[in-house]
Image 1 (cartoon, rainbow, N blue to C red):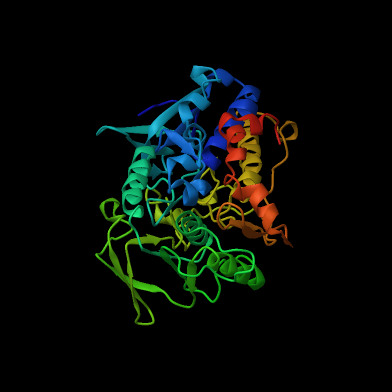
Image 2: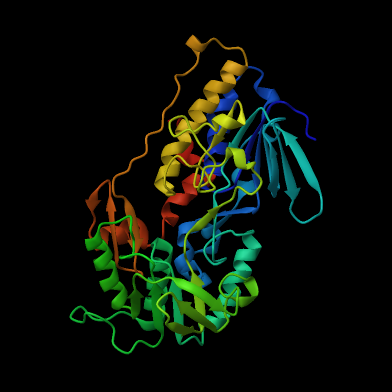
Length: 416
């Protein structure tokens, strides 16, 4: 066991974890008494951090994005800090012992496990997608290998079924539709005789349930223009072979998709995009909410049941619906309260430490959904956005224009 009582352990190397680590190194440790005795330990299953929202386009070809911007080394991003104050651990958390304040980590590339005690813990392990094409279900290398397998089948595919009418499913279908079929002209309501038949199977009444029905209808119209058909009020009951679209060896396998209405669709490629599962398998169930996420104080973002100085941020926490903008709003609350709690633990008087920070979720309609390279639907802070604005903000590169400053820490240069 690493015995230091002053480890600030951050589990998860994506938006929440990387952002919290940068903020802690810039604005918390320098202001602590005996600052040289503290160390930020960032644990990540992948050595690379990536712009996960870009997956619906990136899975098609490496030519879609500059790969050195899409994937960035975590270790290199933190070389700017003194070595004693930061440690990167490439591995996966396997057990959280919140009673004894320690976490066990399985080290990548070997059979060893390291147990690390902590004085503070931030859980930012996120959530895994059903399909290994849509994010880190394992690590950087596994995602790249999954894309390579899928692309081999894409070159000859004549039919594709996408399960799920949320943003991931709609964006994936839109990207594949435009890439494989092109786009119908302005005067055409839909693309006639598409080269590849693409079907989105959606369990709800409309796709994109976070957005108003009128925007869902607009999204269906845009999908039709790239040869995508949407079937609403129907679920995928089963697939054959079992594991198609999920198992890494069955990502480009011909699949029979049986629907809840009794219909069967035959697909050269099957992509399940039916939500995510929180990465909380290493956490005692007493600390979890009903949906499997960490039971998080919705105001302070502390995990109250886990003891002192334990927090959750990102999709793994129960305090807000999963969304990147919610993560960026939550990071200052987590780091502000982490700083306050560490100063108090170090003996500072309450009157001399910053006030407690409070998180308030913005529940206004906010979601941007590109459909191909030039169109999209969305709303921000309750206001509908025109298609060109969705393209400008997100659709042109799926937020890649924002991630450089996040991964390098420049976004957190000022204490917010």
